[in-house]
Image (cartoon, rainbow, N blue to C red; front, side, top):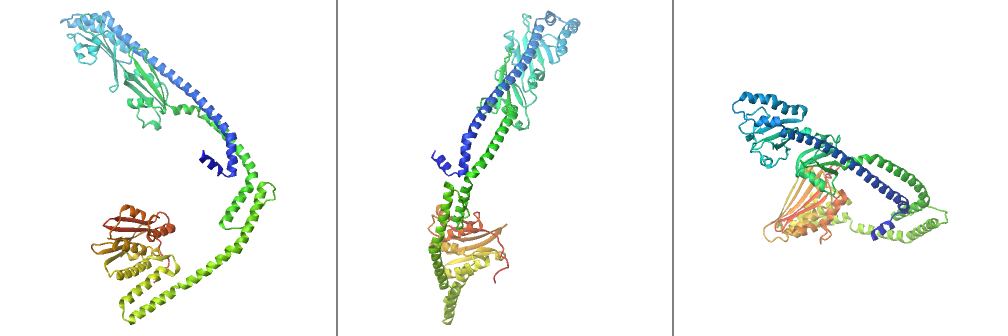
Length: 573
């Protein structure tokens, strides 16, 4: 609540008025609209679910009727006396009589069922072992004694349905109870696709249906548009979609009334139901939007009258904050806002007087002090002094003094860079070489230096004095602390695309990872390396700067990354 209070407190006056309008006018309208939307949506969903349930029940009824017809046909064959006599008659070796019975009695009765019902694929009666096989309508019972369902039908007179989803095969089998003491089984196979065809015609698109028998899926069908083509509608995934609390599908199911005991489920995307209420929703939203726009236009005109002068005053105050002490807002109103504007104008005039009397006088004094200081450190005076020392050293035949004086003069000449903050890489390298000459003499040439920079890079601009602090850091914190072996500093330069890289590497004592990470932060005790990094980032952007790689006992490598800027006008030779 405190955060909300602070947020509302810091809102501009115009926005506060809008917020009050929103809370007092639009919020109740929005609540009523949302309630109506959900209420209508719930009614439509319930209606759609009911329609889906009715459609599924009708399809299940059609399938149940077909199953009943097939079972009645099986009963007809099982109890038909003519068929019973034909398959149980002892023909012995009288093949003519057997053929005559099959042709005139058995075949017409069995095959007529297939003609009357085109969805019946095969009708076969399996009789005693010694009976002759006749086409596909009669076969010895030994052909099916190894089937897994044979023992189940042998113990009762019920019809057994067997469905193989993978092979798309469905048939019913039953024992012929009238053949007392003799074996007899009726096998009726029907067209798998035609049996379940009613489930494929419930809707035109965007739905799926599955049929289970004893928790085993025996049939599945779905037709969806491209957005659902990649979904997995296997038995396991359908179960998870059905039980999921946030499923995007609506499920309905029913059970078969036939003795086969089918359980049928149907699922459809909830988005299809939402599509039916979309026109009504769009109408409601359109009315709300038009009302909000009209109210907002009226509110804008109303608030403009109230806050116009306040906003002008705010903008004028921001300009004053930047240093522009010109008052551009005026008001002759006698209300609180008018008094505030008049008071602001008087305050600014008073500030102007104070600045003229105190601030500008102090600034002038500081400028005089700065000019005096600059005169004291005139570069020409420094160069002339170093030149005089050099000549005196030459006269005294002090070559080391002359050498270090020339190196120091060259170092400061390139470091001061005539007051410029950018120099060509060639001058930066010259500055580094002068600095290294001085350090080598100071260290009695106890370490080696290697510089590997392509001369084609000498035309690239760099900020001045970016390598000297890195080399100083390498000497002070790397080479000087090294106790074994000879120290070495390697300076390299290369370019990749539009980026230039410079590196300073030493074989000193190195540092651990935590210290290396803190060098470029305010946690670092030193300032030189961090200063270089911050200068580069301020000049070129956050993606440029320094990278530090270091290992204890191995050494440290600092890589400088800056953009390539080719110096205009060539080098200052």
